Length: 125
Image 1: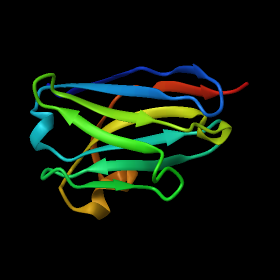
Image 2 (image 1 turned 180 degrees about the vertical axis):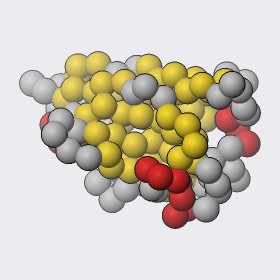
Image 3 (image 1 turned 90 degrees about the horizontal axis):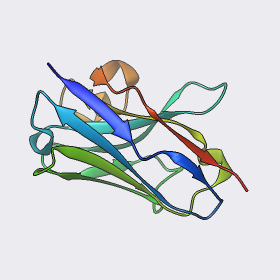
Image 4 (image 1 turned 60 degrees about the vertical axis):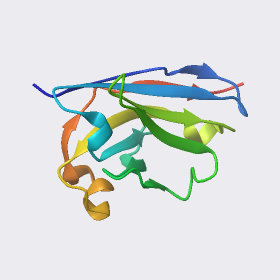
């Protein structure tokens, strides 16, 4: 059974950093495409970042240069390093497993097979 469990969210001041984790089970995360999405209060789901099976990384313009996606094969875990956080980064963050390794699928909510339950990031002074 595929499961995705996020952790690492919390309250942080503007300019601060957090590292989100997504522990995978039921499949090998190091050889799978994976994505992060977020949902701000009162808004829809927004694609944040993806990593392809081959390790290529992709970012939304709003987070490029501030967020970094990575994965650890030994721990079967996906990460999202959040740096230089802004108040507008406040959201529930979800990891998800895409249906395919096609970038278009990796960026769309209906391109996902499995979702975690999310971890909340609040950026506030």
